Image (cartoon, rainbow over all chains, first blue to last red; front, side, top):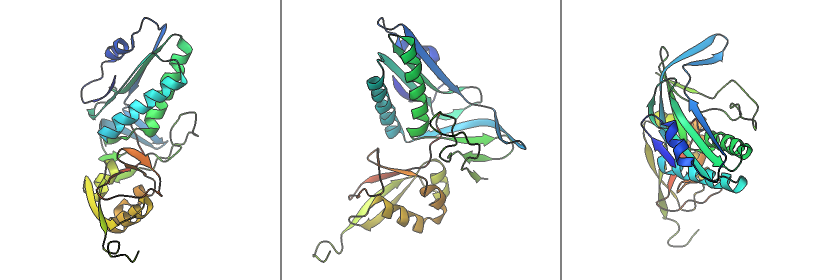
Length: 162
Length: 91
């Protein structure tokens, strides 16, 4: 199951999709949108909602490639990746990844790898709609993520509008 | 490059723009007429020349042709659709 959808993500649907009698473990990751963004100690931004945009055809192709790569690295039986597009309210799920494998450790590893890769490689972008400060497309500078392959860094290469 | 067909050969390239790039350029796509044999690096220079506002994002973007990431030396063909992929922020 690989989808870009404009409706709320139903996490149970992903678990059903990866259900497999040969598997002893399912891992489901759900990424949710934050209401508050602390850019620096004096700048706390409140998000009213987010808009997600994708280069659809390429995003779906990239998600499929990532799943195929994960299946080579770990003994995954089934996988599901769903990303939301359009308007998403704070606290709602914007992305969900589920995998199933015979044993739990590889399911954890594969699910983590998939969500980290998705966030780096798949052409999807979010636009913050702040309560007070207009809108802003988010284009992180390299290394501004918190994944283990990069140094955590707060500053993002963002561009303002309005 | 002096043959009868090469001097006037131009190729037409559609550049797809997304997110902040689309906002900066005020367009979802731009059609450029470029010399045959143009590389991705040359396309980027041409794009920045015509749309200076795109420079900050164009210099940190990745590029895709036919939905596959390509590098700066990739040679473009007539009717290629090139996507400018600014740093992504899904998830």
